[in-house]
Image (cartoon, rainbow, N blue to C red; front, top):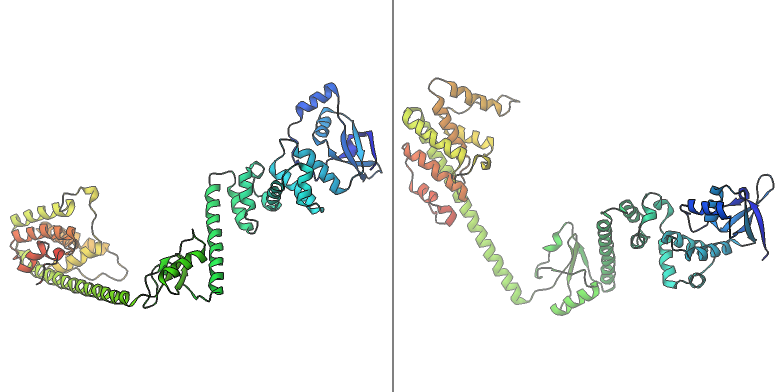
Length: 464
């Protein structure tokens, strides 16, 4: 290897494109020192061909900061030690020199190792030349695997911590995941995104291991969409048990199979893995009895709901007949008193609710009740007309001479009718106050209605 020291014009010196250190930083202080005292240490360069005029060119190996500072200081020539080097030797010298500096970034060092690896060096050789451990070198090479085209999509890439870089490099088999992480780099969302991606990856790896085990042991897997794996099972099998991802699938499955002494029915879905094992004869009998009890309770509930439905229709019919017959003849004093009581109940509520808490029922339910109660039902809506047609009709009726209180009474009663629910505490409370108004006006409350008003359907005592 020939070595010589010469003064070389700055215009014949070229920065090394493979220099691990991509940013020489601020060289203003060094430039001031060079102006005052000159350059005390030569650069290390290697021949790099000639320019268009035949003048020799040299590629800088060591001294990029001094070169930048000298150019800033206005020097025309720099002392250089010229050595003939192979591309691999250049990279080795630059990497060793730069790894001894504290300001070389992990990415720069990683790319330096990768460059030498591409030229035939191995990990142990890189570790020996730089004084690093082999595990350290492998860690840096992992970072170097992050594609350069993805790095350019993040403005914060150069400022990422070593932990962030390791996390991103860990998804070398998933460029889309790396791109998502780089998009969140340097933000508060990085940790959250990393957690989600790790969860997805761990779930995928777990599933792959589970499927491989099932194929090896001839275990059939049923694929279930949604979360049905929580409840699906064949006849004669126990309710499915979850297989925790915190335990490797083979160990988790074999523990369950050993405890239950049988081969599982396996299901996989959005809810994870579920294993169901055959029931004992005693368990099958208990299961049958439980199903019978559930069906019996369901039949009772259906019967009770049917009874409530029939009662609601019958009692509504009684009130409707009475209202259509009696409303036209109600005296003004009684009508006014009824209107006041209904208005208070409708607008304030059975339990003293404030106006802001009042939640009116649907308009359609109120219109339906109005039509049941009114001596003259509302006319059919013309085609294309909205609910405003009926609202305007009710207003028109209320404007008729002497009909204001009667129409208001009817509308308030319809509103409360729509809120009655015999199987709900609030609905029964509405009915109690409403019936109180009707009874004060002469409505005859039947025994069945009285039981319902006393909470008969809520307690299951209503039997008429």
